[in-house]
Image (cartoon, helix red, strand yellow):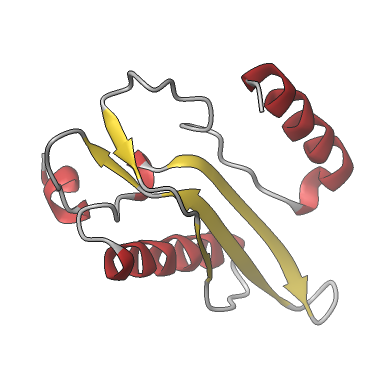
Length: 122
């Protein structure tokens, strides 16, 4: 799918989803010459539930990083992932807890594995 078509699809989804969804697109339109090599299969993870939406988002991202590390070492850095998608919904109505889902293609710098710990320590 061309990047312009993908952008249109994302914008339409955002318009439909409204404030109930959070979408992170930091690396969604990265070019092949971005210095990253990515795996072919997306990793999708659901985090634990929490009354605080930010904590629920963090839980989904941490779960994603754990699953990505299990599937292929060195590809577990959420900030290097391509096509990041993060969405949350409430379970149990308006006063219920949030559960979030994180999905992305795991990537790493070309020629080497770097862990989350290594990139956050810099």
